[in-house]
Length: 151
Image 1: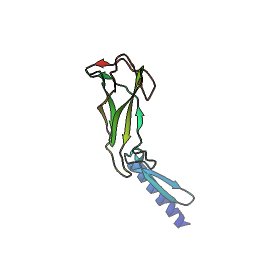
Image 2 (image 1 turned 120 degrees about the horizontal axis):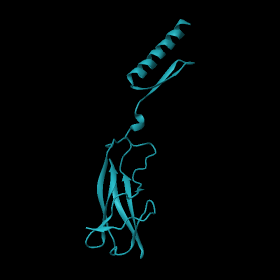
Image 3 (image 1 turned 90 degrees about the horizontal axis):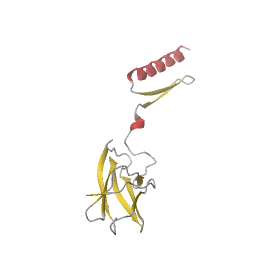
Image 4 (image 1 turned 60 degrees about the vertical axis):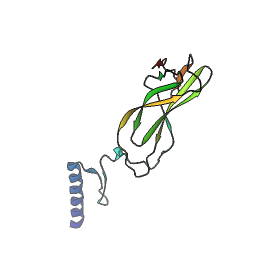
């Protein structure tokens, strides 16, 4: 019986130590006296998740003003890019509108650490024909974008 009490006391001491130092999350199973722990903050890791979606672009809503260059065909806007990501501006044209889509692609490999940053970067695309009076639409949301201004 003394051995079992000693094991439980040791388990309690380990749990208290982990709780006081903030070094991890500890789970104690009273029935078996076993201890398991995991580091605190592991949910904030910037390493690649096991369900990796690297290489598959995701659409990002356009939140910044779209501008048209003097040639009437080149469009610019700003988009947010994180570590290990690239962004591109894609355009689908019709006679009445232009749908712009900011595509974000992760290039993180399994086990690779990426900077936990967000950068505002300029993205551009060139239309086949001048924008003229065509409407601008956001491909991620379907909403109409404010009228572009000329640079």
